[in-house]
Image (cartoon, rainbow, N blue to C red):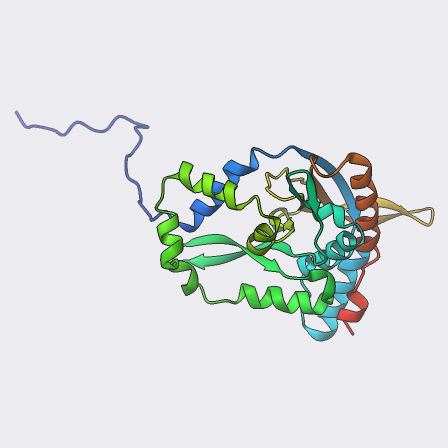
Length: 274
């Protein structure tokens, strides 16, 4: 009698898979995530009417063909607001707070490395002393950096990330006790704009090692009241996260009110579009 191959049962899962390298760059992120759990964070969710600044950006692009970065605009507003209340980016050192003059804003830029997109931090130094256009050009230049620099770590970083993770994190904690080192390595304020890749209302709740971290969420078109009339308005979902060891609720609320005023009025856009 002929022999027949027994067919695979319907719906059986295949074990076929693809194995790709795990970039050491992500070990830095994993270590920071572990340290983030040690923070006592408070989160405040808000909606900002960004109709005016987004219309400025659209008109500028229609007139010149240049697309101004909304992230650069927001960083400019944030740096101004923080410079007016430096406690918002203070670092704790024992029983003292270190308040820096310059606001160094860290944001995230994606780079294509092989077949993987790697999110890498970029620090806009002294953003409170730069114009919106200067911040815009700096971020655009960072986005256009060649990806070859992310494929190979310097030898000292490669050595460091070959250490066991508990040892790496202990070293991070020891060195991280210096506010000046933290400012040099990670800036003083963080902005993440991952949620802006989508549409509609959406808030992000981050983990962070910063005293102040801003998460830009989705932008939704909703009815709003302007001069007693109902009009379609664009609202940005915003999460402001702060280290409660350093910042209390009332100062955070005042800071948010000032940040909202700057963003909604389109601070700096008229000069940048000139």
